[in-house]
Amino acid sequence: QVQLVESGGGLVQVGGSLRLSCAASGTTSRINAIGWYRQGPGKQRELVAVISSGSSTNYADSVKGRFTISRDNAKNTVYLQMNSLKPEDTAVYYCNAKWSRWGTSYENWGQGTQVTVSS
Picture 1 (cartoon, rainbow, N blue to C red):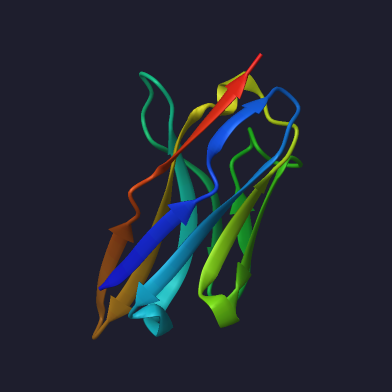
Picture 2: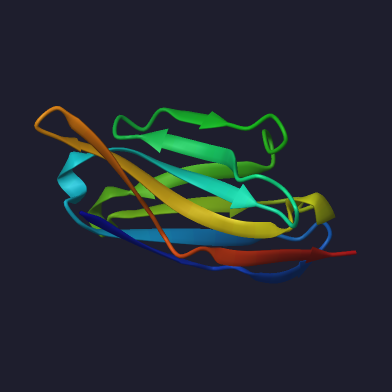
């Protein structure tokens, strides 16, 4: 199993910045990718950004150029730097880890952290 703990959410004004952290523990050596997802009020959960074990990254079009995902392997932590925040970025942000063992794929989720962008 992989345990994930998110932190760093909060209330910020339009145009502001926040950095989210996702600390992983457990079977971290088998993680293939860690992603940030979000779920806004009345919306489905969507992928925001993902970083692979090889550090390749991918972003949703809505956050390209504003958000940056990165990782600190020594700390088993993935970060999401969010700049130029907009009201539509308001959501609960979840960390997701995809990992595999003996040919079987698994995923684990964190508990989520609330991000609110006020205008």
